[in-house]
Image (cartoon, rainbow, N blue to C red):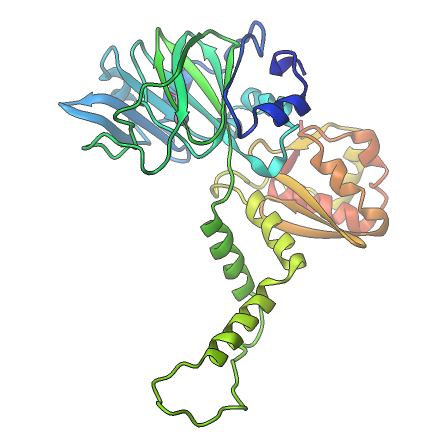
Length: 383
Ligand code: SIN
Ligand code: CO
């Protein structure tokens, strides 16, 4: 695969993914950054956009963080050097940025977090740190000097007096200067420190995984929210005991078996995980169209092969059960049976839907209903 510097997706996943960093020179040859520093500053002034400014030295305090939205004046007052503007979820706001994601489809949709942009003038940095994300750092404009290496975790020493997790005694192992089109892949836990050499924009394509705590709390919340009458533990076999204070081991055995029984439900686990991992990060991401469409209009547009695509920022995934397929779109689930099942892989393959193949489904009322729902909730639109 070109973008991976001549190695295949399988080789990349086998040798580097979650294992070690990879510098890819000219992953995107002749790359032109689709956003300017001014546009990033403009986005950072909007309420719906998550943005941050990091100052290396803020009136004597190290590595200070300010959360957006900001006022335009804020940017005219910024010092000439040594600060960074971070804009989160750029794939949702800038279609040309979302386009980049099509190069990363060898990684499952559910793993994707978002594309973050950082703008920094000379000397700007967010400090030496590590993330628990897999990230591809694409140099989009200007030059950034990256030092990286060494495995870090919550025990690694940190700088005091800053809300950011900045590593204090960390040296890194390798240093490279990236220019536009170059890309650095970093697995979770690898320390890194990127300093802008000139006016510099870096795009971070981030991939997330849930923590074990997220899984436990998320799945158990899902199990508990099912619409059902409360069930109580009973103890019809209760025996007299020597001391009323004893919680007997038979009680713990019973709790243990009840909890295991509840958790041991692969179907519900899959349904929960699909919804959880495609849920939009904020309410602003999936917005209904100004004019809702009805089934007839949608069927006509699909038959005319008008290009239908995902809303930038929407997440699509599916899971095949025996006998049915669950399609997950933006945190909702749709169960497909029989001839409808191939619709799921078709909708999930990439942001641009294969219209020839989709037209085959346009005669089916139920599927047309589903496509109309997806359209009217804002998960897909006609380009
Ligand atoms: C940056 O681009 O300045 C920060 C990205 C990162 O280190 O994760
Ligand atoms: Co980082």
